[in-house]
Image (cartoon, rainbow over all chains, first blue to last red; front, side, top):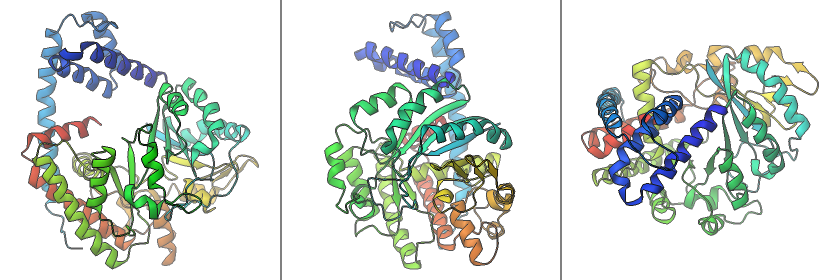
Length: 101
Length: 368
């Protein structure tokens, strides 16, 4: 439960950051989604380390963007490959299912 | 290590009278004392089932009727590091703003059962009156995003597409979680009607994706993931949690494979009040022919063998008893429905596989 509470607090902080950004949200949305993705991967400890290291503070300011941008590109490439693989695998498997029952 | 489903049936009472409900609505509510009896035995049961964490899942009846026990027990789960999440399956009718705030603060997730336009006939109020109007009145205070829609053979001349459009246009729910009722209630004619309506629903979803809407009705996502993970990693070793990766803890202190077994008093496993273990039934649920669909004889020749998780363990056990077997036997017409759903999921993928919108949807599915 402690772990989930930390995840919850991270999400809450992210929402606060998003709300603070308001009109600038689109510019930073990839970065926020990246962090949200980390949370979904239950890597909240790593996020907390990054927050301390790169300066994403609770007041919503994001200081060092380049590190996160590189991580986004690296991660995106891996995710893109998995998406294509998932679609192809599911397509091939379900191609064999007869629709007549 | 796996996650154990601590399914707490805190009351069998309900404020609705659903046509397909399998609970017997006995009037007993779980007390704090019984809750503690269940909570004390939980670590031993988790160990027995090879789990190192658990989900606390409130179930009913309508669990919100026993709100006092929810308020009492949620803080206990919050303090328990072995509790990975808390969940309530509810019809949402008794979710006022204060209760929603309590649940939000404690990170309790909700699954709201609501059948949309079918609710009037399938889920009337306890006094028999239609219930859709009640939900329309609650629309502004209820977050219906995690909405579960049970699809059965009776749809009072409102098709799946019509109901889906109503969810989308009236409630703003783009991707409701349509789920089939996996009981032996579908006639051959019902399956044919389902087939026709499902094709129309798939066409509607394909159209929306092609128009750039990130919308995927629940079951297409589920069968997409089951197919991909089944093919890549092999399907999971159990069909549903009943008796294997979770148990149903009843208001009277008895424990069964799940709530449905409990309500029917079928295969009691433990009595925490009298401190009795029912070894024959306990052993039965460690038999793969009960919990693992990959061992079901009927599935051997099915093309979905490596991806499909079959139906409800309770229904399949009952079906087995019809042919004098104490093992799960999948129900013919439920198998037909599952084949149609997998087939239509395949058709949807074929149609939209190259669109960016579908890739975004898959990205979210893989993330979920």
